[in-house]
Image (cartoon, rainbow, N blue to C red; front, side, top):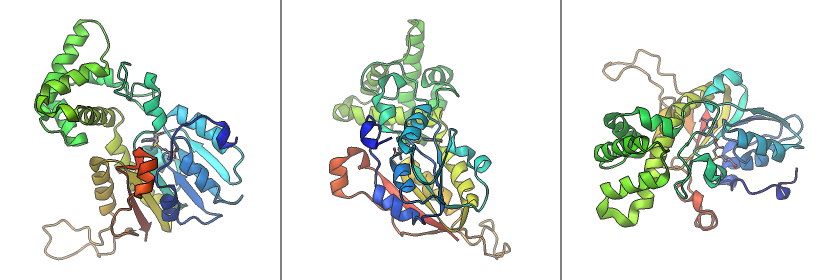
Length: 317
Ligand SMILES: C[S@@+](CC[C@H](N)C(=O)[O-])C[C@H]1O[C@@H](n2cnc3c(N)ncnc32)[C@H](O)[C@@H]1O
């Protein structure tokens, strides 16, 4: 289907930079782990010929349905895997990919469709699952956690200040809302954030966004997904293949950097070992760019979602 005939879904970030990072060969085999609206996939597919293959993953069935329509008619072989990218090792054989892309986080569509319960604008009950067929919603999860557990999640997934106070007030709010027999809506969380940060009135939306981010990442197991999948990607890539990962906030970026770093070391001996006994030949990834690639000012002006993006490119060695 012509892209122009489809409704807006998502504006791909750093498209040219991602294609560059993947270093696409027309008859190569590529993976897009975050299909979304198919913006990156469509551009990758258009660089491939009939001997090329694109494997695309998304756990969100809206994304799979939309992007499948968008990519109908591309020349290359297009294979959709409607599962978590943490399943990569069960879906793709070792040493078969020339490049793999991760455009992490959520799509504009997921935020814009208010009934999906991702947005803190409006008053739809919180859900925050990318795949509504599995796991538990943010509603249900919040009803099971205590303040200690919630505080740990707020720190780990969003580097939140005043995490314990915030968590304690959220737990109190959740039990009050349950007693009223209704669902948790964004204004409930906003009232808690305002009460914990009375000195940061101007930053309330930013703080609320981070609370949403922390809960969303927990409900979807996002950090574990990134770690599991990137480790599997190293096995799936051919020597010379590219691993291209775009993150949107510091917690995600740290996870990407630290997971890749496991494969950038030649020596994997425990730190306390005085001499290397592992052979010192374990390096499997090298950085293509010393520093992460950032969007241009022009792209940020045209697409505010690009603002916080960081792109890291590695080569399998
Ligand atoms: C930022 S959007 C990708 C947008 C896409 N690159 C485009 O140009 O339209 C991220 C997508 O990845 C999906 N996603 C995030 N984590 C996932 C995971 N662990 N497994 C599969 N899909 C995931 C989300 O459902 C979302 O559709």
